[in-house]
Amino acid sequence: MIQNFKDLKYYLKEDRRALNVKRGGVIGYLKAIVYLNFTYLFQVNLRIAEYFSNNNGLINKILSLGFKYKYNILGVICGFSIPINTFGPGLAIVHRGTIVVHHNARIGANCRIHVCTNIGATGGSDKAPIIGENVYIGPGVKIYGNIRIANSVAIAANSAVNKSIFKENVTVGGVPASIIRDVNAN
Image 1 (cartoon, rainbow, N blue to C red):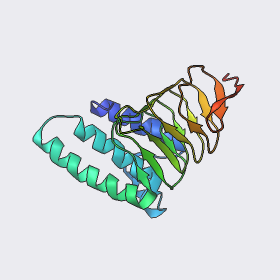
Image 2 (image 1 turned 180 degrees about the horizontal axis):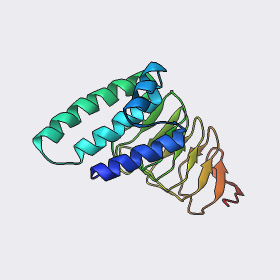
Image 3 (image 1 turned 45 degrees about the horizontal axis):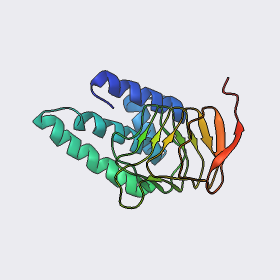
């Protein structure tokens, strides 16, 4: 969670690295506007909204509202429904398309996520998945329920994950998802 300006800079740097965006700051932001890189613009505004929301003070709350509005508009354009404070640094949203994440889900650093993905709760519960670091989430994946997914897990396209995956460095897939094979993470 972004608590201070140093954290904000770190999250933005890691997101740029994950997205392979060559330049940050004002120039990078202006390039994203010119080239209509809405995914990158969404992530920048998401992180800035997180920063202002997590800090007290009237000015921070007012700025938070502005950036939340902007990231919500970009979310509608891109098809993203991603609440603040759910993803760690190094988020890579590969391209525009439907991505829905429950507000109680927690996803670790360096997550790569594709379109048509849902991460949510089941049966009216507020308990959502907790996903580790360095997780790849393929297109069309559904992850739901009070489950945990270990670090360095790759989830194959169109899989439905409704049970915890405790083993690291594996590929999972299928409906319902199960371990397909071990992956050498080195």
